[in-house]
Amino acid sequence: MSGLVDTVMANLGSDQIAAIAAKLGTDPAQARNAIEHALPLIVGGAAQSASTPQGADALNNALSAHAGSDVSSVLSSVLGGGGSGISSAILGHIFGGNQNAANQGLGQVTGLGQQNAGQLMAILAPVVMSALANHAQGQGLNAGGLGGMLAQESQQIQQQGGTAGGLLSAVLGHSGGNLDLSSLIQGAGGLLGAFTRR
Image 1 (tube, rainbow, N blue to C red):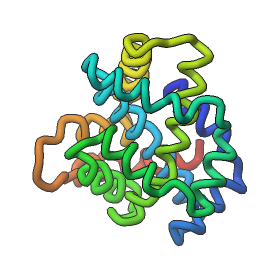
Image 2: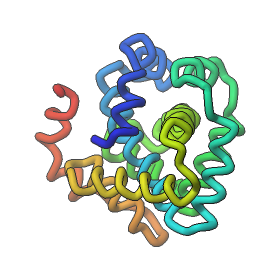
Image 3: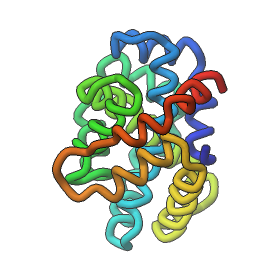
Image 4: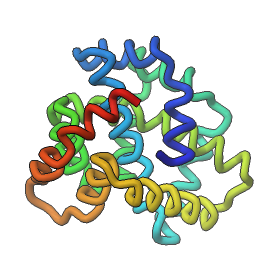
């Protein structure tokens, strides 16, 4: 995947994935698969919102609230019911008018459905922000550096293709109306299995 996605995945042990699965009312295998699709989507959305100087500045300023917090404690707080307002604000900032398309697409590709997909995105958004803030702080990135780093990550995800790359490209290129990913899903029949086995 991308460095940021791998960082977050490395911090999600089987206990955390089981807790997310319980929250969504699904099994850990489906939850893990959905997380592996949701994380690239959030990273790619952040890259798109940071692709203008104003967007990069806004994201950089937002990160200051997340720096220094570790991924596990952020996840525990969100699963414990904290920070739902923060999650909505983060997702609104990242996806803007495409937030519904992101939830819809993730729900279609993973079989979670739009509502659960939205809930998963809300769980993961503060976790990604925390990982991103720590990365930016560790690398000493300013707003421009942050935008550049995210653009590389997004490009990497889309170049790797698969359903995660296809989903990201479809959502970022979405211009309103319903998102129909049936062709992507059919083409990925065998791929989804490969994803969950990895």
